[in-house]
Length: 392
Image (cartoon, rainbow, N blue to C red; front, side, top):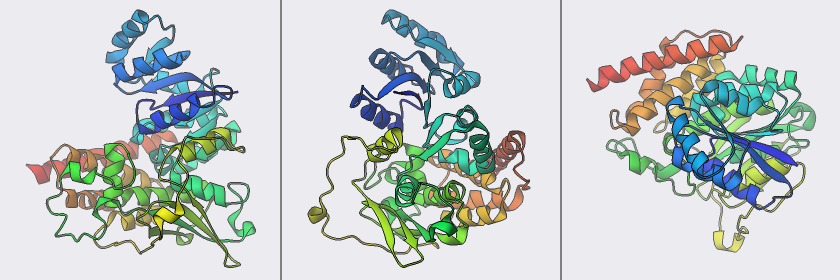
C-alpha cells in the first residue's frame, strides 16, 4: 500500500494525483494533505480523504481550517507553517510524497522527503533547479527514489533502460525535450508588446496554474526543464535539446548511438505521468482517454524561436555558469512573472529582468541550503529593485 502525502493538494497536480488515487483504493491511501492558503478547498479534500495530517502553510489560516474540520467531524491533525510542511514530507505517516508546491516555497519540504527516504514524485521543478546537487545528495543519503512528474522528464524516464542509467553506458546520444510552443508560438516580439496575463495563461493544450502557464509562454518552463534533465539524468547540457511540438502528444524522446529514437506518446493529461510514478514499476489505469492517432493525423516538430523567446537561452547560460546561477535564474523569473501577473510589468520585460539578475548577482558553489537560500533572497531583492525602477 502506497501511503501518500500530497504537498500542493489544491493545485492542478494535486487534483490529478487525487483523481488517480481514487481509482485504486486497494493500492493508494492519502495520509497527508497540504496547501498554501486555500482553506475551503483543503477542508473539502480532508472531508473526502480523511488524512492523518492536514497542513496549511499560512499560520493565519490554521484556526479556520481546524474549525471547519471540527464542524465536519474530521479528526485530521491540523498544523501550519514551514516546519509542518517538512513534517508532512518526512513523517512516518507516508512512504510516498507528491512534491507539487509551486516555486521556491517547495524546496525545504522536497529536501526533507528525500532525506527521509521517501518515494519522491517531483512536480516542483524549481527545487531541483535551485538546489540540484543538494537534492541528489539528500536522495543518496536517504536511500529513497525520485520519479519525475513533469510529463517531459517522466517520458524520458520511460524511454531509458532502468529509468536513470549511466547515459554513456546505455548508449544515449541525446535527450530531446518537447515544447508545445505555448500560446504565442509563431509570434514576433512586436506581436507580444501588449500581451495580457490572461492571454499568456491561455495554454492551447494543457490546463496548468498561472505561474507555470506564463513560464510556458516565455519558454522559461522549458529552460527550467533543461536544468532539471541535467540533474535527473546526469546529462551534459550539450546532449539536452528542445524541439517545439505543437500537438503535445510526443512528450519527449531519447536518441541512441545506433540511430534509434524512442518516444513516449500520450494525450496531454498529467494523470498518465502521475499514475506511472505512483505505481512504478507497474502500470495502472489513469482515467486518460486512448490516444487516437488517426484523429491527430500528423505530428510536427520545429526549432524554438530563441530570439523572440530568450528565456530558453538564459537557462542554458545559467546551467553553464554552475553553482547558484540557476538559483538566481529561478528567483528572478518568479519575481518577474509575479510582477507581470500583477499588471506591473510587460510580458517582454520578463527575460530582461532575469538577464540583469543573472549578470549581476554573485554566483557561489552550491555547498549547502544556507548558500542556496541566501542566493535566492539576494536575487529576489535585486529583481524587485529592477522592477520598481521600471514601474516607477
